[in-house]
Length: 270
Image (tube, rainbow, N blue to C red; front, side, top):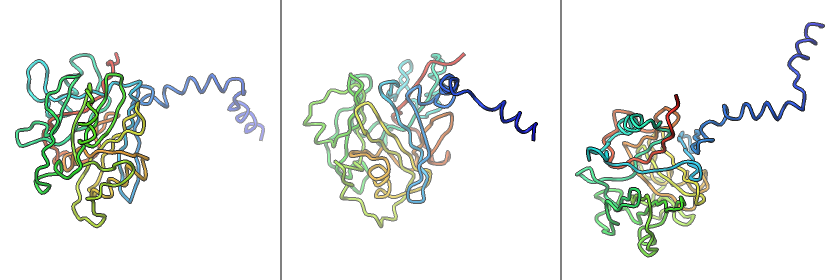
C-alpha cells in the first residue's frame, strides 16, 4: 500500500504547473493545425472520408500546373513535392485541382498568382460528355486578400471578380444550402470523389472519399456533415489528397496525370 501511495504522489502534478505543461505539449499535439493545415477522418453513410481544413490566415494555398523553369506539367503530387524540396520547401498538403480535357489542360478557368492561364468556360456542352457540363458548374477562387469563395459560374461571371488563384470545375455539389437538383440519391454511378467548400472567407475545406460514392451522397457530406452552404466538385476516379505524409482517396493504380494541383508548402525543417 505504501509503495502505491508513493507512486500516485509522484504522478500528481501541482495545479500551478498545469498551464506550463499544456503550453509545452501544445506544439506536439497540434503541429499541423499550427501551420494552418489540419486533417481528420470523417465517417458518413458508412464511408470514410479524409477531410482537410486550410486556415488561409496561416497557410498559403496555391495552384500549380507547369514547372516555371521547364514549362512541363507537374502532372503528379510527387513531382510537385520534389520541386518544392529542391527549393527548401516541404509539401504539407496537395490535391488535384479540377477537371481537364483530352490535351491535359484545365477544362475551365484556371488562374495562378493573378495570371489567367485559362479563361472562364461558359459553354454548356453535353452533360453526357463529362461532369464539367453537369450544370451548374462553378469556381473556387481566392482573392488578393486571402479570402476564398465558391460561386456558380454564372454568379462568378456577373461578379467581375479578379482572383489571385482560381479553378473552375463542376458540377456544384451544394448551392446556397441545397443539393444540386440533378443528383439522384439512387444513382449507381459511384467513384472516388474529391471536392472543396468554403465555410468562411479564411477557411477552405477539402474532402476525398476513400471508397466509391455517388454525387448525391458526396454532396450530402458537405452540406449535412461539414456544414457547407456552397461546395464544388473537383474530380473523380483518380482523386487523391496528400496530407501529413500520406495519400488518401483513390488507389495508386487509378491515378492519372493531373492538370492542376492545389498545394500548401512550408519551409523545410533542418
